Amino acid sequence: MAIEESTQPSERPLEEVFPNDKFFSSLLSCTERFPGNAIAVNDPTNGVSATYNQLIGDIVATRKAIYDAWPREIFDNQGILKGSPWIGLLVPTSYEFVVGCLVILSVGGAIMPMPKAILSDEADHFFEQCESRLLIVGSGQREVALKIKAYRYTVSHEPILSLPVTFRSRYKNSINAMHLDDNINLPPNRPGLVVFTSGTTGPPKGAVLPRCSLYPRQPCSPENRLIKLCDRPAHWIGGYVGLFPLLLSGHGIEILPPGSPPADYWELLRQQRVTRVTWGPMMFSQLKQYYEDHLRLLSDAELEPYLQGVRVIRGLRAGSAMPAPVLLEFWHNLLGQPLQMGYSATEAGGLMSALLNVATAKPSSIGKPIPGVEMKLSEGDKGEILVKSPRIMLCYLNNPEATRAAFTDDGFYRTGDVAHMDGDEFIFDGRVSTDFVQVYAYRVPILDVENAVTALPDVVEAAVVAVPDRACANQIGAVIRLRQGMAKMSLDKLRSDLSQSLPAYTLPTKLRVLDDDEVLPRTVSYKIQRKQTATKFFGDSAAVDRVQVCSKLQAGKDRPVKAWDWAGLQ
Image (cartoon, rainbow, N blue to C red):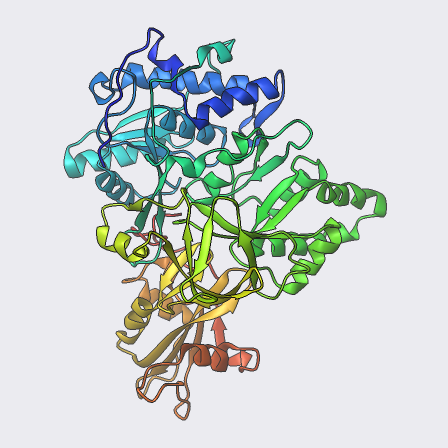
């Protein structure tokens, strides 16, 4: 994906000359609205509490390091990347991540995020797909980067040019070190980010999002300024759209490493360090459990700071799936105000619609489209949810066939979800296709899993189904019939056998072995009825003692990891 060159050089040093677009004009505006010691990004884990002035200084310093270290010919005379825009970013959620992203965007680059636990052959695939050899590395990822570089050179004899994020810049007056040049025009629909998504048993598809998907929204004032908790993995869409639009609008960012224990979250709440939070059902559940196991036992005086910390939150939003009613009731009572709900997708650039009060909403409502998003149903008042906005993905990287299939003739993105209208609200009804099942942030191709199960020598019949689970959207359940003479099979053995051919995130976490007289529900044309199968063998009225269960997402992570076990998203 080649990019046109910009022209007309500036008299200032390259590192001080920035595109005059919404990213950097908004950042300068923040320094004016929140001068002095107002914190832009607080990253206590890494000992950083950065003002807007420091953030600008570190961006400028890292840009200088790039221009000093990387070949001059890959940039035009204004310091904007020529050719492929992609720059790898091997930095976990942290202040370094914020700096790295803004540096990439400032040189006209597009962010190619890499998980901190990425395998070398997975990273090599990303570089190959993006036709890139540029990499920005976090301070804790240098060993991983060395392995990636060595592997890449062994495979292709092409060196990767890597560079660390520069901290503690020499710029004392950083505002004067950032000059916005009207002659540097970077279109809002220029590639800004690629997010790799699961859904296949091999390398994931890359959803290419435009720069404007990360643009700031409405500027805030000191009176309505929020402190947003950022605890999502840096390579997931939530790690971007939940951070940059708010940061560049003037809201503060509080970083907590993804995967932190519930005690750390409750301590952060006790200290009243955040006022805006988005969590999935699993986090809501874990924090509730910690409260009931530990905090509820405290005296009233000891408990009160935790309750006050929850009640200063001005926006508590549920994402990825609707939490169970018992969780909604718990948090509504604790918060003393309505919970919100967001409907989003990676390919849509994040949030599409919002529900501002879950408690009073119609069942399964996903609310109304947010400003700037056009949303409709394929059959008028019912059908597939179709969306259009400037933030929608541009394409799937190097996959024109998948791109064409993802859009209607009039440019609406096909979400794959089905809904109907009730008044002016969209009511979620499920998925268009049962071929893919959502498990946490992963999309599991269940036909591939079912074929692999059926191919096992001890299995003569199999059905793989989605088993609804509020904590993770769904679990993967397998119902099997063993060949004659086989008395039993353990779930652990099934997973072990399947791990030879399937990624770890697709492996079943529930197993039911059929008796001789039991049958799978099928249609007259002998197709498996998946919903009926899930209800019959894994539903509330099913025989619990006949179902083998293992730990959902973590299951399999103790085994040796092969490429794409976790879709390159680990």
